[in-house]
Every structure is written in structure tokens, then in C-alpha cells.
Length: 384
Image (tube, rainbow, N blue to C red):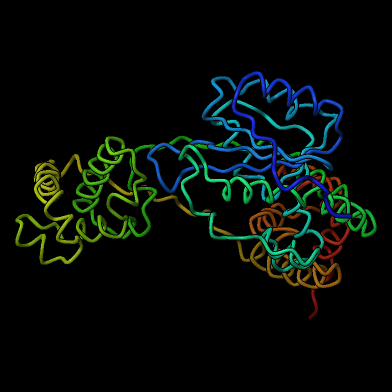
């Protein structure tokens, strides 16, 4: 049965309204959530909208109008209320980053879709396949920090949670029928613990694709240009990619132009960018060129641990077993158990099921459901 929540959501933009929302929802056992942010439009990303839905009502919470959102943790951290998200990783990280709100008792319908063997797990596709519902996509990349928000955007945001409770009901029954409900519940518990890493950690070039192939002098130029862009983006309150793209800065760092003529000849910047940033970029390059050879940055190389021939053979055998097991379960093999974990198992070479407890990457459900197959595969005599 589809959610009968009204088309017009309740808009909450005051502390009093938030407190009333919390009191109203204390008695609920299932609440769907989603959020919208502004990473496409501002230097420092922030949560701009939080959508919530019950079986009978839908709500839009405006964090930009409410000074203190911490009371919301009373709902999100309540273990007696199941919080339903679709693709919760980003939401979990964002809510903790902006408000230090941790989520308990989470159910991720995107994760559930993967464990049910669905090939495409985006919300639009899932809702289309399940309910014949097609969500409007044109507002996905809009600026959610603008105020007031147009009514069509508010209606669009509300629809993202409108179908999550009926979807949860269906998926929970299907997972239980396949004996996989506890798999997803364990994965969801782990998902509640994800957190965002440090922002703009130095050296900045470590986040740039292809920087590992640059020489040390070019790395110094690239780092100087990245620092320049970071300050510029902060001052303009724009995302980094909307100031100057990564590929552009990498190309400049590779060619190291020292004059305006040389910079123009790289064809890396538009005439407008040349006019705005040409001279500051050349100054950054000049500074980087003055760095003594001994002080130039070096791209950190991790020495890959040498894998023995026996471990490599075990990994290949485990991969063959995994493919067959995943086919039997009608689930993606990487969802069932990923390559990194499989390699760890091959290197550890467990002899009995209890040995699997020494492999932290293995989930409890994996040890229970896959442990016997892993051990049997590893101890199976090799064919002559």
C-alpha cells in the first residue's frame, strides 16, 4: 500500500515548529528521511533541507532558518524508531558533520535493493520498478540554499520520502523470505558509523587524479595552484570545480608556463579566466619554481605488500567460488564479499571457521553464511 501522505508537506522553519514535529513523531515507529545540500553552489557544503515522512504526513525541515537543529537527534537517535533512507551514506556523514547528529536504527532501502539482487538501485529506478512511479529529476541539481524555495522544489523534495515506508515494508518481507534480513540490518548498523574525513587535507595534490604521474617540480606548481584556487573559492563562496577545474590546473602544472604568452598557448584557460586569473597563476608558478630542489614535494608511494604465489592462487580459487556462490544467491558478487576482503582471507589462509574471527573486515553475517564455503574451498585438495 502506497504512502497516503498529502501532496503539500508541512513546512517547518522555526524552533517551535521543530519541537512540535518532534513531539508528533515520538509515537511513530517508522519515519522516512532524506536531505538536500548545496555542494554544487557553495564553497563549504551544508545541509539545506531535511525531508521526513510518516504513513500519513510529510514534512520539510528548513535547517537554514532554525538556529539549533540538535533536538532532531531525539528522533534520529531513538532506537525504537526505524529511520528509513535510500542511499544513506551521504546523509549519515552530512548530519554528523553539520550537527553532530548520529543515527540509530537505520534501514537503507538502496542497500536492501542490492542484497535483493537488484542490478539498478537508484531511487527513481527502484520506485519505477516497484510502484510504477517516476520521480521528476529536473530539481536534483538546483540550488537548495536559495530562499524562499519555490513550491515545485518543495513538492519534489517531499516525494523523495513519500514511498520509502511502503518500499521498506516490501523489502523487509522479501529479505526475511530469503534469509537476508539480518545481513542488511548488520550492514545498516555499520553504515550509521561512517563519518566524513578531514576537508582539504595537505598536500592538496593527493586528491587530484593523475598527480602521481607528475615530476616533483610540477607537483610543487600544482600544490601552489591548488592553494591559490582554495583561497579564491573560499572568497567567492563557490565550489572548487566552478572556479578552475582539476584537469586545467594539472595541465598548467605539467607544462609550467612562465609567461602570459606561454600560459595562453596551453589552451587550458578561457579568455575570461586568463583575464581574471592569469597574472596570479603566473605568480604562483614563479613561487613554486623558486623552491629549492631539496624541498620539492614528493608523491608518497605505498609499497605494495608482496603477495606470495600460494596466496595469489588461493585468491583466484576464492574468486571462482565467490562467482558461483553469488550466482546461486542471485546477488552481485562484490556485494556479497568484496575483493579486498577476499585477498585478506587468501593471505590469512584460515584452516577452520573460528579462524575467520581474526579477519576484522568480515561481517558476522558473512562468517555465518559464507564461512563454511570459504574454509571448504581453501582446504580442498588441488587437482593434479
